[in-house]
Image (cartoon, rainbow, N blue to C red; front, side, top):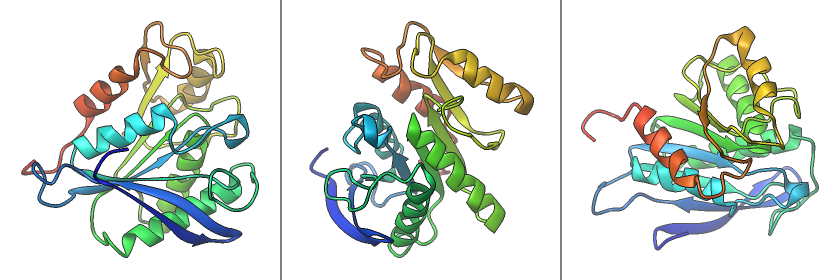
Length: 215
């Protein structure tokens, strides 16, 4: 994605997983102030870690000083295996987190996902909550409500959705969020892939983010 991107493979349950780590500008941040895991849209519909929304999320986090790591889901790019309906993908994201914790053991953690990736990250956050080690923030763009059995999410989750999303209608997201009493930010005129409106994602996440002290 930029000169500060590292590409690597990690061992997964069904073979290697292809990953990319985007680092913040060293002239601005002497070292990362946080760790973000970014999940891409549905692999059977062309989703990859190089998806424009996933890359926008990674750039947003590096701008906040985070090390942002993306992973190709099973069967995508150099990642082994086949699509596993979100279960294996959540397992793989947990493996990626464990791998990154060997490098960044104590940094604040954020999870972010787009479309199908929101289901994976919401499931991972649920696992982390049950383990007593939740991510500090969860960012869901184009949440896959109605398409997947989205679990409950923490109240401080940042949700962004397109007004004219015809893949995941806003009404389905509202139906999912209403019992939880959690708000969602709607981008007027935006479709599912936020064509010509990607900049709003960066602006919104940055404006709503609780930056670590000293940044």
